[in-house]
Length: 204
Image (tube, rainbow, N blue to C red; front, side, top):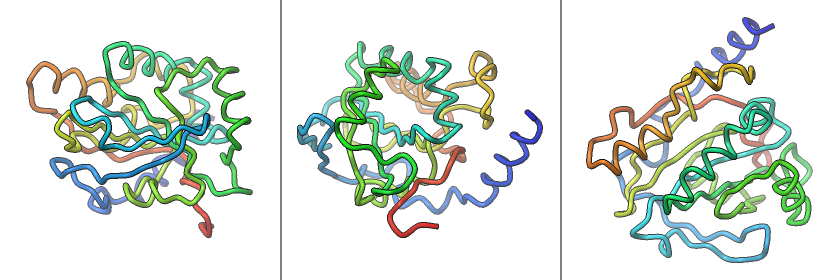
């Protein structure tokens, strides 16, 4: 089963070209404004001077479940937000598609799984997702205090749905944040994201 999982993810990942990103590492991250599950508006520009992590999510996706059911995503959110990092979870599933959540549903879900992002942005139009060409759930982006993208891609190096893989995985998001905060270049700026496709409006 685990082998099948790896193979299916490998097939999915093969179709994703790293060069397809709309925004490239080293570029200024595209500006956006979004409304969170509590009705508060967030603009990327208001977080200039801080690190920002964007995490695309879909709670019906088994790859997303891997990181929430294991507690990995919540631990990352708490670890980095306590260090001043802004962590924005983004839901780009269109209404009627897997992963779409009303504000009340998202707030209930976050409470249930003890999620701890700065905010969960509801993006059913896919405007923010298309701006970054987010492809999978999860798909991760790290922006530095100058507003430049310093990492885009997978959360880690184990593209499976097996929660037991989390402990032995190299977490690319943590690596990028740690290296950049230490004044070092980010060794791995791009990786191939893995997971379910983002369920944009009109997507198959």
